Length: 344
Image (cartoon, rainbow, N blue to C red; front, side, top):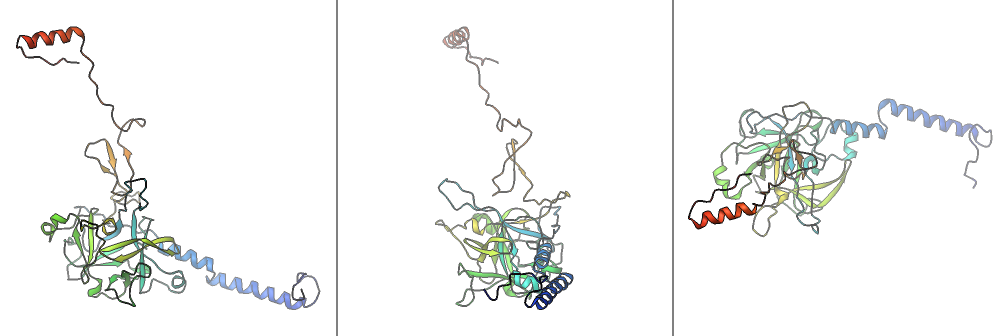
């Protein structure tokens, strides 16, 4: 108890002058850090303000993807078909996963930078990517199935980094799933080349060389290793923005040798309106004309001009014919005459 101070520096007991100077120095250091923006709360605020700043996605007028477009790479998720199935996953978006330590020291995102899949599907610095040409195709030209391209982050704070992957080795792999690692690097090399593959397996040869449609399901494949961009849904990582899924390059196949939902991606563009939504949020009309359906994986259904208490129109029931009408039909059948339907 000898080292415990029981009085404040205002009480003239013991080394009161020394205690008073120490508190004044502590307050002075705090004010200096606050003025220079070095406080932890200020750094965290700057991190969120820089990485979550809104980005306007490119709007396509012909329904196709073009080089130079700013888009989001969204996985529609997996719907649960059975109550006992616990592998339901919400839609997630590919985004850069900058560490909090590096974010506090650097003025922009530095390579190498890991990536992850976040549930926050709002266009911002973290999840906005630019379709970059690697073969000299000018900006504005349509992207085609099977054509090599690169996915770059935006200019400025994001650092214009490229999505990169390489073969699995003993020292280089994903931290938790041990699959092929995916990260962001600064140099444009053969390891940063990707290509799109049509979603329908039986039509992939026919789609080869055709323009890629925006806002449709497809596969994104690494050109060197031929592994699909994948979400390791069994492995989550803790980030400054919460728990997010690990992203790898892995061909996840089912028993029929078909790609699972973790390999499905949708390249999302913006809407012509100024409401801040994307084409992923915009509902799609149902072929029956009864309801509007959003993009696959959201599980949301909106009414389309129906009674709020009635999502489906009531079935039309025909009234039972009377006894006289039944006798008339029997007599006509017995005489061989054609029986006319009764009008309601």
